[in-house]
Image 1 (tube, rainbow, N blue to C red):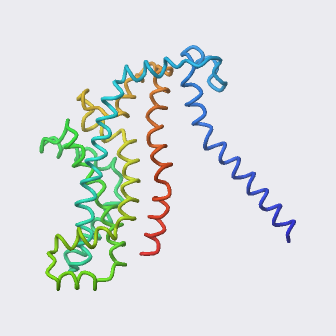
Image 2 (cartoon, one colour; image 1 turned 180 degrees about the vertical axis):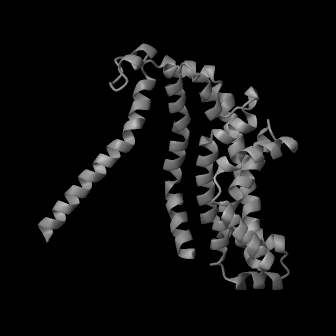
Image 3 (tube, one colour; image 1 turned 30 degrees about the vertical axis):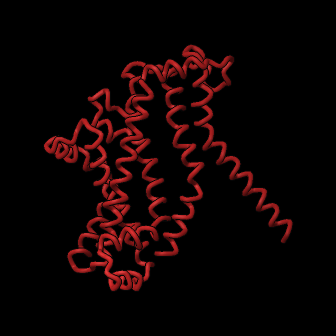
Length: 277
């Protein structure tokens, strides 16, 4: 049995190592070619760079106006997250604590919205945003993210609040606590883990999204996010790989660092949500 277990463990380790190589190989190609000249990339894309062209990064960041794009992306990410935290958690709390036929219908309607892909609603969404004057601005784009992300936030909040004893709220109401204060002083601190979880996951979505920002602010150069700014290095008939790849490396470093810092919170939130469900 011991030999059989060791053999199975060895086979599993080899299989996982092969999968790891397959997953990491595209990252190697991006990073390795980011340091090559354009001619070297076209001649030998798979090999190591013969010399490190650090100027590729400086040129790419200057051409794409990186710091302006970085600030735009950060601003949209923060505003979108803040809105979803405030409105999404309050809505999830209201739907479960004020249970009636209408609220149940709205909850299941929101659950159904989670199954609708963005591509199927993007044209009517952009038309609505044009009519309401939300296109071309970061505020407008953030409000759109509130609508696109509210279903998931409400679903997670709804499940988390189920595990909170209602007796806590009854005691607060008896002591004269208002509904608004009750939520923010008593309920919201108990949702800390699940709020951190959906905020971290949404941050990756907002930071790396390309299609929705392109539809909203793609025509306004000063408001472009990082993903839209990187797009300028590619064209219909050519791609400046010696600028595109360094820009891509700089863009993905930030969410990778963010993920490494927050990965424990993601796992804690998922485990917490599973137990509460």
